[in-house]
Structures are given as structure tokens and as C-alpha cells.
Length: 194
Image 1 (cartoon, rainbow, N blue to C red):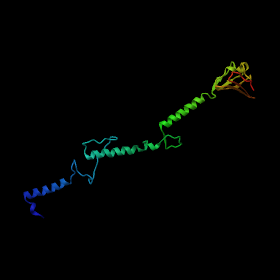
Image 2 (image 1 turned 180 degrees about the horizontal axis):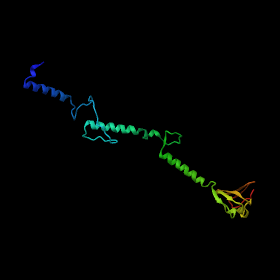
Image 3 (image 1 turned 120 degrees about the vertical axis):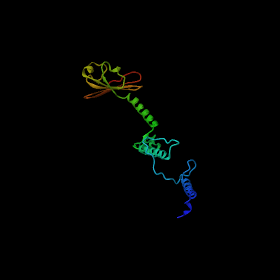
Image 4 (image 1 turned 180 degrees about the vertical axis):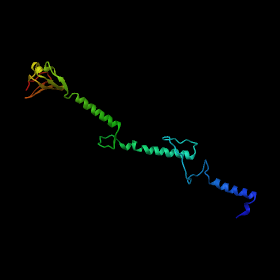
């Protein structure tokens, strides 16, 4: 054992030397190198996506970073990335249509719906004069109207179809034994029922 430290001055020098060595091992708060520092523990943070704040101690700061990363990992399967988007008509469950694609689809379906409004639609019962029917549609004629309705080819119960374009109107009667058709040309003249 080295007895040179048994005096008061010796003890003072011994502890002073040991304390300086320990201080030199500590991290300088402003310019220290922390590359070899080992984190022994971090604070447990319960707040979702916590924000680290300047002036916090290292345990709290790293606890918030750890919690924020854990929160991101928990929701990563629900996040939308650019590679998941598509502007193409694809039959893929892994792709999500963009707003541009949805808009284009809406325009297409609006066009189809507008075309369908000119298609054959059930319009109800027909009565009166067949010459007055110029709206595209499907009409039903029951026996009472069929016998009294003007300008019909078949005077009985039937389905009465009307298809109109800007140039002509076509009418057709479909009944149990057959069908009859006639047309109205652009001059306003009706053909005979055939």
C-alpha cells in the first residue's frame, strides 16, 4: 500500500486526482462527444406522438423519440404512399384510385346515365292517340285502351315501345301473336303499321 496519501495533503491530492478523472469521463453538456455513451434507461411516455422539447433531460428526450417511433410503427399499415395510388383502370386490390381517376369514372358514369335517360324506360299506361307518343319509353296498353286508342295497328292489350331520335320516331306494338312497327320520318309522316 502506498502511504504517501495518509497525510491530509496526500488525501486531498488523492481525492482531487480521482475526482478529476471522473469529471473527465463525464459528458460535457455543450460540446461533449456522446458517441460511446450507453443509455441505461429511458422514461416511459404515454402521450401519442410526443414532441421532444429543448431543455429536457436525455432520458425523457429519448423516451419521447422511442414512443413516437412506436406510434408510427403501429399505424404504418394504414398509411397511404404514392406507390399505392393509380390513375389507371386496374383490377388490383393493392392500388387505390386517385381523385383524378374517380373524377374520370364519375364523368363516364354521368355520360352513361345521360345516355340511359334516352333509353327505353317504363313510362306507364298509354291511352289516347299513338301519334302523340314521341318520348322514348315502354308503355303498357290494356285491352280497354287498346280498343279505343287512335292510330294503333293492333287493337288489344300489348306492350307499346317508342324510340325517338332527332330524325325519326319508331313505334312498336308487341302482343301475344306477334308485333307491328311503324316509323315517323323527319317530314312528320308516319309509315303504316307492319
